[in-house]
Length: 87
Image 1 (cartoon, helix red, strand yellow):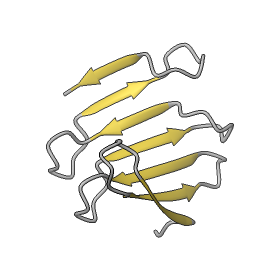
Image 2 (spheres, rainbow, N blue to C red):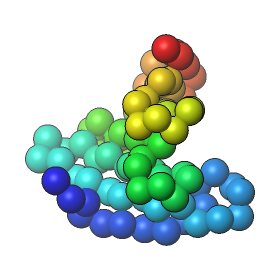
Image 3 (cartoon, rainbow, N blue to C red):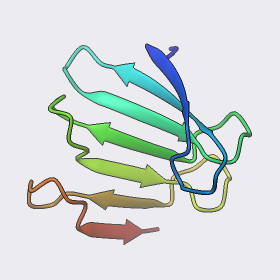
């Protein structure tokens, strides 16, 4: 499945544009797949579960192996990612 939109922007603040693929799902959720190292594979996936423009959780691949090893989430619904779990 492809992306509805693809953008170039510096997500991690290193001065280099990263690729962000946006997928809008039928259930109203929106996924942002972010390739931080330019290898064509997402290193981060931010999810807005209800399409309100606020990220509800972020999956992170720290070691670049293509598998997510951490999650940050907004556990109390206030719009701030406040809980982190690592594998």
